[in-house]
Amino acid sequence: MIVIVDYGVGNVAAIKNMLKKCGFESILSHRPSDLFQASKIILPGIGAFDACVTNLDQYGLRSVLNECVMVNKIPILGICVGMQLLASGSEEGNLEGLGWIEGYVKKFHFEDKNIRVPHMGWNTIHPQFNNPLFHNLDLRARFYFAHSYHFVCKSTENRGAFTKYGFEFSSSVIKNNIYGVQFHPEKSLKFGMNVLNNFANL
Image (cartoon, rainbow, N blue to C red; front, side, top):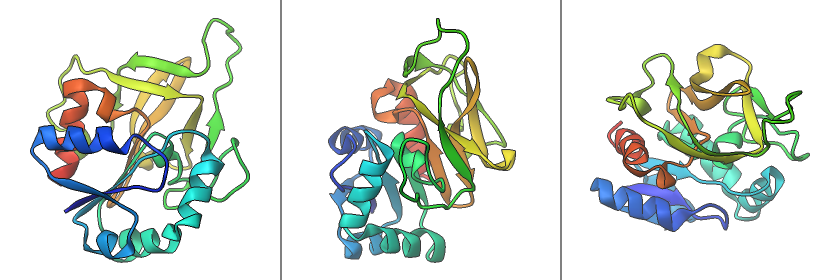
């Protein structure tokens, strides 16, 4: 059973619909009993870092997710701010992230004022280390981004893919059973379906 964490942020219905198109049933839930029984967990996120952390903590999900992911080793996919929550923290706020992947979230800063922030729209990715999320990736694949902050991994071993926007930034992170994508697979048409399908089949 795939559980999409429903904690008041993120485009959860769109993710559920995309999974259904891929042939996978999922549920929207924040109940610990559902999360502990999950075969896979998807952690979405839209908006500000601290707002997402606050919602997680208000639902009492930090300790639950820690046990599910770090102890029980349930595969998890963080999407957009959900990926950023995997870091220790963010320049966008003051609250602590989940800290599962060593790194910090920083705002885009460009000397070239023609490069706009936020990074919004379609862009390509460059997978690293045979990241299973991008198995059989179409060479023409493009993904939809909408973000002003990016995950800076302490170790390049945790960079699952990079994207060029002013410079190379981590558009995916990976560590054992923990995966993250900065783009929105639920908005990325057949290319996003491929990513969700690969995650569901891990």
